[in-house]
Length: 619
Image 1 (tube, rainbow, N blue to C red):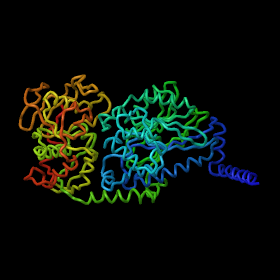
Image 2: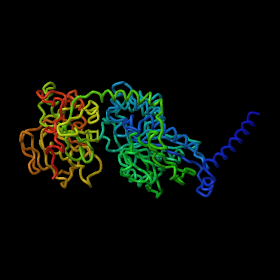
Image 3: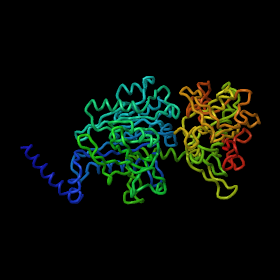
Image 4: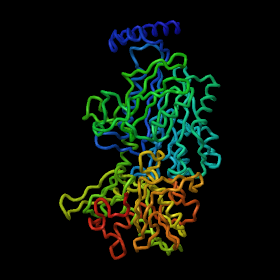
């Protein structure tokens, strides 16, 4: 009796569904799909990447609470995908860089709660790729982030097919438990969907993976495709963090068996004509259509998508399959969904109240406290932009940060039994505010500098270190590395290595040969870009490209670079950290009295003129 009633009820529901389908989608929707390809499974892939701890958003744009609302609506709409025949399924993935050193991440350190992990857990991803910034605090913090931040570690799994964790016992334990894996399989409406992860091969010199071994991406991904196919899995998605979607397109040409590629790390904006964009992106350069189409090794078209990050968009790719083969992409529904407030447009949303209470409120309170702590004034605008800026040329903000490290290292060198540093270098990639901090409205007028400003400029957990006894020839190689990724045609990636400097000045030729290094940091191709190097006391280190004989140098630098980050060729030279992060060094230098070598709370135009003071000059 119960079964018969149930069948009759389902019959009534089916009839109602057909009526609603006609009313909502219209007769043309059914007719369209009757004439179209025979899709038996519609898969909606919801995705984002490079959230990078930007949990609060900006004004009416972004924010984890609004993102949660958009994500919930998108999943609901995907399951109600009226007007089509075939089953409907949804997967939700992240393509890496799930947290980042920042004032927002500092809230986690201050409160003892991984707010980013809580957010990822509450969003209920199906899989998360490991990106380079996920290793910035080292393997121990990543392990803690995964194990303590999620109620059910392993749900979702963190994925990377080309990373070997066997020399990192903590992370290897997570591998053994299936919390970290090469791939995972999701079941949707009876369909099995394989998801493979991949991480940039540049990981060792742009982050801090310690003993994690990075293997080649292509063979690792192809091997995992074969493993999934041997289990009868026909639908396979790659979620990768290669830092450049064009790299994913290029990778596709050598791959077989991947149906969909979700890229991360490049912050590219993909959109098609008519797609609503964030108000701040209306005038932005669009990298390509959503989706881009690559061609794989077998000649098949593969959709490749990404989002520009910071929880500003949720990507939605809708693909129709038949027996595991991609038949069609629904171009009308595939697009980046912008995350905006209700006052912005009809697609604006209210923040999810639970996310506001659990995530945004405590993080916002912590950041507000940093913002309310005024530490100084500036009478000159400080340029921390990436391009043009700290990754390609001298800026006054870069000079300020380099000076702070040289000053702090000289203050503490004797306490740590170290010689007095001669010079300091700060890589542009470690300067993160990517903005201009405004000056007063009239000459001599000032604006406040807050503790939050220092965190925005230099947020990583990088400690100031002293590296003694660096030969002058090696110092030139370090500078050659700093200018080796500045020109069109240079080896891609690694622009963050450009150096902001203190204690010396240098002249360089962008047209010279870029230095190339072997895996062990030795020089494979000598660089010819560094022309002159002169210490502030007038000592000539390099003249017309020739290293002058003389005493070794002592360098103040963050430990990330001393360890070979950004391919700085220290080659294992001994160094000593002095117990101060580069953010603390910046704050200390700004507030310390002039009598003690600091700035006394004033960043002046005389000390830090706009455009710098000629510490680095490109000819």
